[in-house]
Image (cartoon, rainbow, N blue to C red; front, side, top):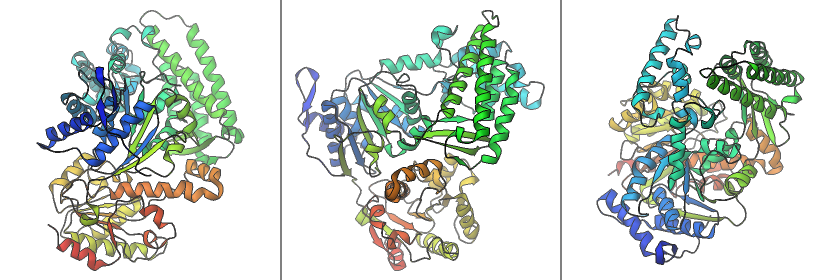
Length: 638
């Protein structure tokens, strides 16, 4: 990924935007000054904003690797707005980034006057909003049999529903995120519906006051709409009927998009889903098919069905019977008389039956471009289908009438083509403003290969040395729960520092303790490899137990390897491990004053033939294999 030649931005007469410089720089400097009490736009940020504006103006796809500290959010927002975008959709990977955009970045850009009168909205999936119609039915005790109020658990859910109904009377948005308590799944399900149940505002008595429809209305009127990657996936899966019209689509944390899109464009069938549809439709005849589905899936957990669902005669027969039963139940339901009070529930049940039948059909029709497997999903089994490649659908739906802007601190090799971008795509690396060579050290100790029986004990001894040298202040990231618990068991109570394990507290509470107790250590798994922001000395050492290769038995990765043939390792495994390792290492330097060590307890990073590919994805830290360098680095801590 190389830098490209840039022309600066300026305003054209009448408010249009074209090549020039002062205004984009001025806007970014106003933003920096408002945040920092005085500051200048960063060089990488300016380069990115200019590249985004040019991409919008030319309608040309852009992929930008923007290292930590670049300020990429302001860069792509300012660039898109000054480049002349009418409506921008930003799809993020995490709720935290959505909240940052809507609560901090967009208000700051509006205050800076980048676009006079600029408006923005956050749009979520329908099930995130309370459904006024479902709530009205719950208030009439229509859902009492489902809640089983005669039991202690049922009465508790009933009290939660009452609390939700009272909240809905005063809530301006009906957004679940605004609740001051966390409702149980049973309670929330009683007052909300997903897209697979909603018959649409025109068919619903509460359609004119629908919270979800209000959210969509605000999104249609906004200059910038913030969504998550899952909702973008639903938009693509629907053929382009979920998001409002837009001419620029930004994928932030774009490295997450391939897996999220594969899940969103796929299908998951569980016995529990059949139960839920049967309850909504009062279709007791579906219970036999639910039980049969559970029985046939049980011995296949962990199995990939090479020829799709029809490749297993029993699974194919079970699904065919279920599809026929769903058609019968739908016909029966539509034939039943329904008064005005009962029609909305009947319409939702009909939509749910149709949605489930469509997904069963998708599973039965899965072909060579899909992968089908059975997995354990919590307490139940799931039959899943996902596309091997997502680029075709993205190109057809998402990119057909929009300018794509993809950005992340870590951009895997070939990400653009994997997501359906063509050869005209511009790629840019704007680097990072952080001085990694002076403020960070990459340490790979001389340990046995991770596959060697003696590796774990040696790794625990090395980890003890590192934590001691750092004075605690350690975020240790592990590729498995087993490895995390083994390391915690080996070191907890043997060092004069508090050592937290991921399952000790909820994630926000864990991070609060880790930030506030400066010498504490936090041992965690993959959920903490990204999205963790702990600037300052509390996180001065990041330890990674081994290179995070994808699971060899992951069904989608297996199918992609088969398709790649002899290039499988380079095309599938190496980009995955390089991206994940860079995300983990990126937890260390979060501000210009941070300094510390990244230690990778896997000798393959220093000794394998493929190490250059992985190292190229990491920040440009000094490298060592000598303990003395680590000791000296921490001794010189400022």
